[in-house]
Image (tube, rainbow, N blue to C red; front, top):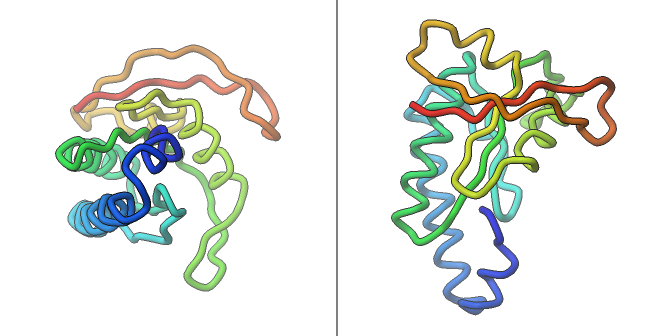
Length: 149
């Protein structure tokens, strides 16, 4: 959820909890509906995993639309890579990359790595180049793209 701290301060704790509950319900429904697994809530966001990158991107756009209906602005990031299963949680550098990509997205934007773009050929997604970026703690420069469905 973009600008979550500002919004929480504006609406107060009780209303913020209602908004988060609505977001969490929508997230669980959209992730499941797009064939994903909701790994965890991060307080003002989620971490989910999917068996295909285009399903992850479609889910992020659907959740963005649902959040808009709640009066919330979201941003999302996606990356495809190997993960480490840690009980019900996930880890590994791919998770860090996805988090860094999400952190660079603007409100209302779904930003993805070139890996996601390359693996989504034929999916119907469109991609707009957002240039190369350094991702904190991650080697090399990363080509990022904004997506549309």
